[in-house]
Image 1 (tube, rainbow, N blue to C red):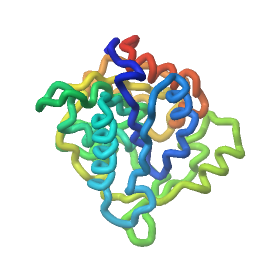
Image 2 (image 1 turned 135 degrees about the vertical axis):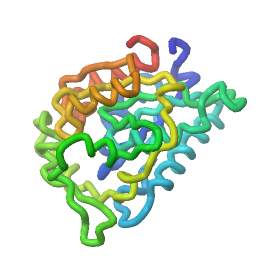
Image 3 (image 1 turned 60 degrees about the horizontal axis):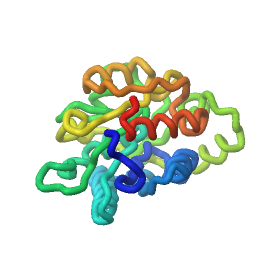
Image 4 (image 1 turned 90 degrees about the vertical axis):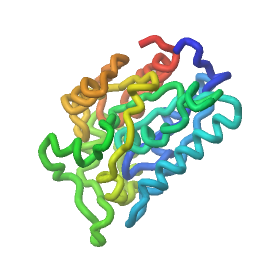
Length: 248
C-alpha cells in the first residue's frame, strides 16, 4: 500500500464502546501532525438505551462518503467494538469494486474485534469466560463498565486523565453486541492489526485468535493496555502510519 499518502487518503476513526472521539485525541492529533485528515464521528450506541447498531454503521458510512466525495481514499482505524461497526460500514465501499474510483483501501484493527461473517461480538466473547466488569443498566438495553482503571487503562500513570475519562464514559447499547456482521472485509481490503499485549479487555490470546482466524499477516505487537494511543502514543501513531505506508 505504498501509494497511500495524506494527499490521497484520509483516516476514519471507529471508536470503542462507552467512549467518545475526544478520548482519542492523542491518536487523532498524531495522525493529523503527519498530514492526514481524520474524521472521528460519535457513534450513536454510546449513551443509547435502545437499538443503535445500524445508526453506528450509517454514521461511519457517512464519514466514508464524505472522504470519497472529497476525492480521497479511506483508511479506517478501529478500536475494540469499533472493529464491528467499522468493518460493516466498509461494505460496498471497497476501492476498485462496483466502479468505486475512490474507497476504503486500508483497515487497521487496534485491539479490535475482527469477526467472521454471520457472527456477533457476543459470539466471539462466548469463547472465553464471562466478563464480570460489564453490567446491564436498569432498562436492560444498555451496559455500563466497571473497574475502568484495571480493564482499560492499566498501564496509564496519569491519574487525572483516567479520572476525567472514566467520569465521561456512558452506557453502551447492548444490541450492538448481538448483531451479526455480514462480511469479512479483511479478506478483500488490506488489513493490519495492532495487538496490545497488556490488554485486560480483549486479552492478547483473544486478539491472536482473531488474527489467526482472519488471516491477517500485518501485525504490530504493542506493550500496551486497551488504550495504546495513551500509554504508547508515539508507537501507536507510528504503527498506524507504517500500516498505511505498507511498511509492516
